[in-house]
Image 1 (spheres, rainbow, N blue to C red):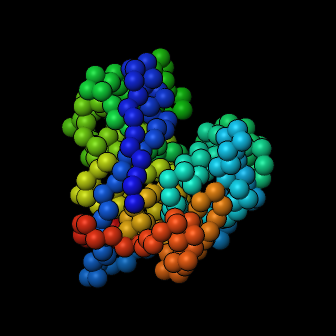
Image 2: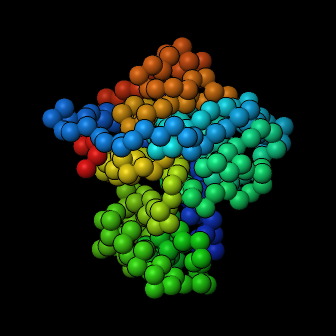
Length: 300
């Protein structure tokens, strides 16, 4: 199934825009297997209050309908995989949940607070955009890029000593310490993805939304990303993961939504109806890939 390719931002003056969402690249299909000898993931007490509640949401770009009558809930501490073909509304939905796009029809409730439909969103929600290709002279270091995840920080308002310590801690936790002073345009795809993730995590969000995070990174980095996400979810972070990589979601997600303008399936991955996939994609697809195989541990 062909996937879209992205275009890199054209000018360095668009540095901030590049950190808040760009179209994504094709992904490598990978099969993920849980090592049967490893201990299962520990989720703690079951939580029933929804972190996200969407009801009868519709959205259009002009006369082009992107989302129609979309309704679903994600429980607190849940892990939702959002799948669907190109142009199905996945990124649009992710941006609405983050408060990046306004909406006028339907309702969205995040952590008990109803969105008004205007741009804004919850301070407890963080967004990792689709992969961006950057020129080697892109004028932001890893430290500066991660710092922008703190709301009080901008290119003209440097982080406080406390914020600086949080940035350094997050960079260290994602294995980026050696790249702290390096321009982000000089990083590999996997390194850059970790920078975007660090930027999202530095504010310790309760909800993390990732849009095509496996785009353009190799199988090893995909596996590393899977481990990071499992560990975050085990600690209680609610995760929404948008992906074309069905095998990546097949193991990670506790809940799957198959979207193409409207919801064709919402439930556990193991019960995903092939008929719903065919209706959404217009072709035979499955949740298992066969190009690479990697093992990772559920929880630490």
